[in-house]
Structure formats: C-alpha cells, structure tokens
Length: 103
Image (cartoon, rainbow, N blue to C red; front, side, top):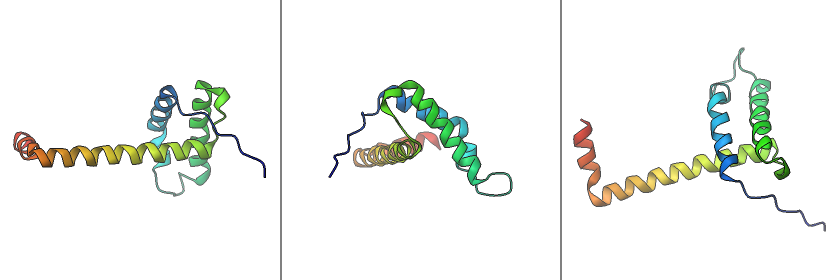
C-alpha cells in the first residue's frame, strides 16, 4: 500500500487570500442555480479562488477540493467561536447589558 504524503499546513496568508477572494465571488458561489448562474460559473469561481491561493504558496499544491474544504472548516470554526462567545456572555450576564444598550 502506497503511503500518501501529507499536505503542508495552511498559512495565515493563504487563509487571508481565501477569505478575501471568496468575498469577491460570494455573489456567484452563494447564488441559487438559475438561467444566469450555472454550475460552470460556480466551478469557475472556485477555480479562480484556488489559483489565487496557489500563488501565495505554489509548493503546497492546493486543489479546488482542498480549498472548498478549508472554506467549510473556516466557516465552521467561526460559527463555533461565535457560539462560545454568546455562551460566555450569557454566563456572565453581559448579554442582557449589551442588549439593553443596543435597544
């Protein structure tokens, strides 16, 4: 059985480029499929994002699948962080204080 070699860890600069480039193309990626947005358009957007990420670290050899997976992981991690922050606010009673100031 051939051992597969592990890819390099994602650097902060790669993550920043991923987030930035996704932001530029999210109107395509998150749009519903219709006569104006096709699967090809979404695939092309992900390929463009991957190309930008590869320019930061060409030796890492990131493909579209890896870039999409990293995006999903970043979103999941952000959601987890927000949930943890909300729980901390609730435990300290700060959320009521913050909500009163907003309203």
